[in-house]
Image 1 (cartoon, rainbow, N blue to C red):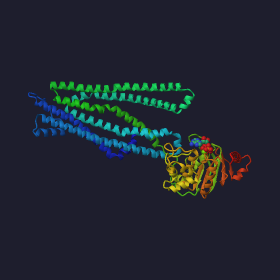
Image 2: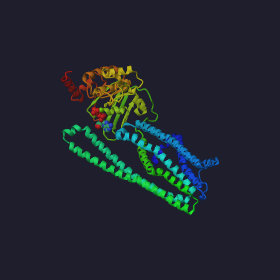
Image 3: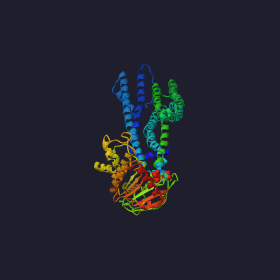
Image 4: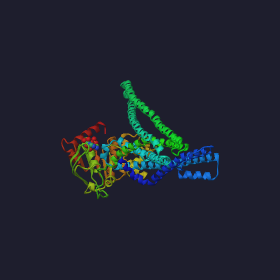
Length: 611
Ligand code: ATP
Ligand code: MG
């Protein structure tokens, strides 16, 4: 339960709303509890009018407000039916006041819970953004989504409805018990005796209901997954003539679901009758014991008192029967908050070192005997890697798949920290620069293209929001995608992704390149970003890049040799180690070398393709 303490900062933030809310809870219940008293008063009044009736001596034990209204009506000299009618109107007014404060109560407490929900979602989102790539590798997207959506809304059930029910429960019980005790202590004890049994029963039944609903939820999700797979795999199912088997499978899941649902219906069927039974028991006790007191005249109570008590009991019915619900809401909220806290308490492994500075990067990079092992898999991706890149140099990294090329890019961007060795940028260790320095001033075209479900223009502009449409177009022209964008139905305003056009792999790559070029940084890393582009377009892009990259430091990771590009140095990686390095000509001269072999194969392919 202490997990919910994490919410205190929000309760403090919305303390005014919260305090007012609790006040309104009290007021609405206060006006509620006055109506039995008015009713009791009227009954008494009517009885007094019966000739020969001797009312039992009753001390005036009504609330001050009721007494004032009563004496005002009596002093005004009204008689008979008029008095009854006036009290009737008073009861109506009380109901209106109660309704008004109920409205205000919802307006404060439920609105507060919505504000807290909003703040909490933002807090979690902000925290997710701070966490590093390592965190995202070890937690599934579904889990992340669940905590920000499902868990937050369960916590909201606590900050809103549960607090409201709890406030109501405390207010109505204390107010009615207070007035009941004031009237007759012994009768109160008898009347309230069944209530604890009621509360405990409800709590247990409620737990059973919760358990069953969770089972239902689980079997429903099984059923949905099952059906979904059938629909998406319908062609496979049909071509393998497996319809019957799939149907059997579905029926079995469906049967489990039905069994659980029927079980729940049974429990629910006994729930309300048993509540009614226990409440009925209280009412019965009131009438029986109260009646005996009245007959024997031992307790200074009248018929009115019995009626008042019956009304109080009825008032307690709903709040008491909501105990179970409230308790399980709080339990679930605590469990959800625990899951939320688990993530909020996680600190990113990669963060700005103390004293890190934001500076303009020139683009000198130095790797000094760097080793790197992926923390959660133990794969040694980089071994004893040393390399010096001076500002303005163009470096190519080639090597077999899995040789560690992308990892080098990740390390420069400090998505991970090196296991041993040192990476320096402009002569300072990478940790002495802020993460903002690195990521703002290094443009990166990732190997796996990711575009947002947004317009082409906004996707290109992503890294530099203030760029003009002309700049966006220039970047697209450099990435040789402008002509194709012009052919789209709404050109640069065309939506990409699920809600818009479906782009080819090569188009996506080039939009991703345009996005990196627009950022216009001093240092740029291309990770295998021309793999889905045909040879002619590739040449055109390389031609453009030659001019664009003038004076910029560039790291180009590739599987193909770009002979048109003048690299200062080419690195060949194998199992995380540098096995060859030098200029194009130097590497070609290595007999049996990886680079020479790659070049030869590429020449043959190109010739075969007629280029
Ligand atoms: P490709 O040419 O296929 O893109 P690459 O040279 O870029 O390959 P890397 O992605 O750097 O290769 O991977 C190097 C090694 O590190 C591989 O063995 C790979 O399985 C492993 N690896 C890559 N990314 C991760 C990761 N996020 N977590 C754990 N291991 C990883
Ligand atoms: Mg790679």
